[in-house]
Image (spheres, rainbow, N blue to C red):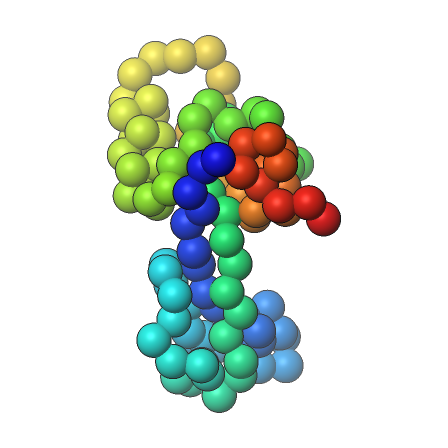
Length: 110
């Protein structure tokens, strides 16, 4: 069973009626509401994956080159791979929600 990372963000971060900055970050939030708009904060569990960039924006768990608990570790791996020649597009870091990770590897059933 793999330990899951935690992220939080404002429920209004993608709301076009409430543009601007909204609270977001790694780990458990220190407050219950967005510091900017007062919206509720959502907490998600998952992992940070290193993927070859896809034009369609789809990054399934099984296509990850590697997965990490910490975003900084995933970014360091992507940066290292981007500095060396390899076959494929650029490497990017993407959040993998717990529900997209197989249960056998610590994910949660939908």
